[in-house]
Structures are given as C-alpha cells and as structure tokens.
Length: 469
Image (cartoon, rainbow, N blue to C red; front, side, top):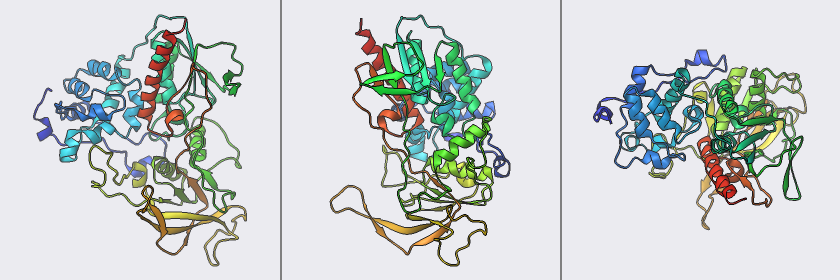
C-alpha cells in the first residue's frame, strides 16, 4: 500500500464516455481511458483492507489490492502477472463486467465511491499487450485430448486452462468465429471484436485448435461431432443459453417483432462484413422502436437502435423502478438493486416500469385514429397494447402477485425487440467424461461467472482424467 492516505484525498475519477453527438454515429467503443498519471492515482485509492471484500465478491477471486498497488507504483508488468494469475481474460471483464468487486469495496460501502477496479484492470491488460507482457506459452503435452463445444467465455476459459495443463484442446464452434455472446450478443460499442480476435490469436499460437461451423449431435448418450475423426478423452459442453425467453401473446407472428439477439447478432455480423438482403435485414432506421425488457440486453438494443437511426426508442419493464443510489431492501452483502443508467440510456430513451405487454397490433387492429404510416403493411407491427400494473405481496409467499393499476394503452412501434432473458438449458444424462459449464450449466449469468465456471470445469476434467489409465 504505497499511499495509505490516498483514499482520503483522491476522489474517484472515471474515464467516462465519448460525447453523445459523436458516438451515436458509429459502433466504436464508447468508453474512454484516463492518462497514465490519473490511472495510477486511481489505483492508489485502494486501501489494502484488512478484510478485502473484493476478493470474496469476484467469482474469479481477483487480488485487486495487490495489482492496484503494483499499478500505483508504475510496476505494470508485475500488475499484469498478478492479474493473470486469477483472470485469463481481463480484456473482456475490464470492459463489460458489472464489477462485483466495486460493489463490495469498503470505500463503496462507506463513501459510495469504490476504487475503479474494472477500469484499472482494463488499463493493465492493454499496457501488457502494448509492451509485450502477453507472451506465448508452449506447454508440454501429456498425450490426452479434450473437446470443448462452444467458444463463449466459459469454453474459452476451460480451453486455455486445459491447454496450459498439457492437453491437446480443440474448440468446436457452430458459428463462423469464436466468442459466443461476446461476439454475437454484445455490441461493438461495448466490446470491439478485434479484442476477441487478439486473444484467439494468442490461444491458437499456444496450441488450442478452433473448428468453426461445427455440428454436434447427441446419439445414444454420446456426442457426435460431424467431420471430426478424433476421439477425445473428455468433452466440455459450453454452449451457453441459446433459447431466449419469448412472449406468447396475440400478434407475436407479426413482422417487425424480433428477439433481441436477432438484431444484435445480425448487426455485429454486418460490421464484420457479412451482407444481408433487404428482406433479411433488421434495422431501426426511421422507426419507432419498443424494447421490452429492462436489463443489459435491452440496453444494448437501445444503443444499437440509436446507431441505426431510430426515430424514437422506448423501453418498458414489467418490474418496479429500482431506487436511485441506495436500496434498503438489498443491503450489503446483497447485490445492490438500484437504478442503472447506461451509456445507451444517456443517448436518449423513454423508460417506463411496471408495464405489462398484452398484444402486438397491426395497422388493421390498432384503435381508430391511431397514427400509422400510410405504407404500413397489414402483417407488420404498428403498435403494442400495454397496461400499467402493480405488485402485491403473495399471502402464500414466493413471487408477488401482479395486479392491474391502470387502463390499457397502445404504444406506437414498428420495431419491437424482446429482451427478457434466456431459458436455462435442459441436458440429458451424459457419460462420465462429459462436463457442462458456464451458462449451459447455470442458466444466463455474467461473463465473469462463465469464466470462473470454465476454470473450475477445467480442474474437474483434469482431476477426472488423472484417474483414467
């Protein structure tokens, strides 16, 4: 702890975002960076607490006080080596992690101004790439093979860990490139895909093989990988949560109603150079957009809609509006459920809570006098009937009861995006050499938890194969 009084004299300083009028015209990363002096000064705020809750809160067990101290002293290589011990992909978490460590930081709990751990982490790994601290390792092989099915954060973490243990690892991915939701779910303005490509290049140089467009089937309790002649000593299923939660209400068949990932993945592919026909293309250009769902995926839809040229964007959420700043209902050590305003929200969005969606309407079924375009097709969405609701305690316990709290109304919308989360996958019984990790095992969660699950699964595979002849 180089400066024991910095937390008293140095206020929290975030890098912030590019100006709105600039960033909404491209898909470049919106977050800025601090200069070296300011970044090291921010690292000095870490108090090296006697009981550092950041360790406990981070699924990876990152040693924030240790690498913050090294960063403050200008020992960038040491900081990276300390960070790498627990986090294989700080370039991902440094950009998109909600920073569980910061909500557990003693400074946050006492002053509301946590150490900027996430930004510090990103600065460390970017300096590591810049100055060559990210080196290529060539592990000694042990003669055993492992197949990883799925190249999202969990699969990548498992693959890298097993590769370092000496296994020959092949990652099978159904899409045309690696990354899972990192590539096809998270917009480029939050995570530039060159960041993923850079890490995949390192993994390939270290011996991990990637096979794209891979079809995997389950036959008689065994995994079958088409066009692959190798037998593997173990298999890891890291296929994420591919099934989004849908909304089965009247009008769902109308054109213009899409699952969020249909928009997000297509836009990322467009940016990667893929072309789509006019009929296939999902775009918000010139449209009134309604996003149903108040989480991060909904926020990503808002930012994407702005960059595509939306006329207006509205976001509705069925749950109540969280408190601002502090929520007495979720005290430490719970995750603080408070109002979150993202960079996408700042770009312009009407936000409403306690709204239930009843029906998707076409130009033919909207109320008389409702404004619709003169060229509105009869099979295309033109509005959405919603109703204000409230939540009452359930006398039997459990989930609160939804009750009506106002008259139904119609929201104008010619593009509707469903961002209501994902369904937990159901798996058959697998042979003992098949392991499931990440969201495929737990249901949709955070990237940092997926990485942690991948690392834990790699250890379980290693322990299992150690017992096999």
